Image (cartoon, rainbow, N blue to C red; front, top):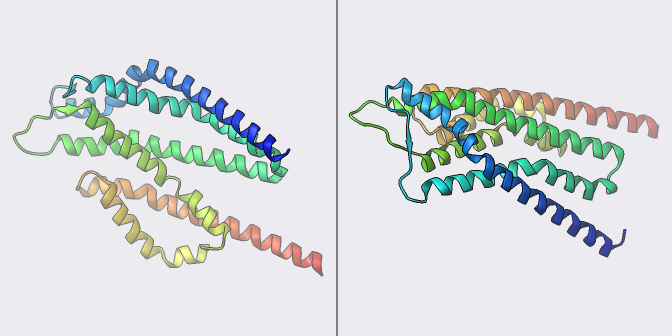
Length: 249
């Protein structure tokens, strides 16, 4: 393909992606009420467990509609992401070798899987501990939880954990470019403990040790998973180098 043909192909893929995003946002707006009911469930359960009224409020006339629109847009982006990734694939696939196509697919699938695992861990494990502590904070207080502030908290926690669960992918690329090795990661484990502790202290919205430990546990598991991934990368590169040396001999 010529340069102009590449530009025309790129324009087609961008237009197709925008159409997919638009359709996704429309569907997201239609589903946003039901999805927020599911999102609000951990908060309502925490309120009931603390013997408070299980109601969420909004503090401005446009608070509810703004939340519905914002959530609809986020849902639309999520729903449209497979279509957008498919358009990206159609644009780059003709220029890739067979083994490169397989590597790209493995990268996309593993990244999405780890991101969803992070979100699931945040929703089913992290949020119950965190909200129980926040709602059960001692004092003569009655919680009035704003739907907009609660959604912001949910977004930070779930997206943050989703990105943290991408740690093995990051270590994979660092190992691929010889920036880290399994030996280096094991040798500097004490520094990893320090960094993980600091990150947990910063990202955990509550000061209690239990929630912080719950936050740290998957990070340590992901770190060791990353060590295993880096070992596989180093071993594969070593074998490729040995085969190249044998071929040269």
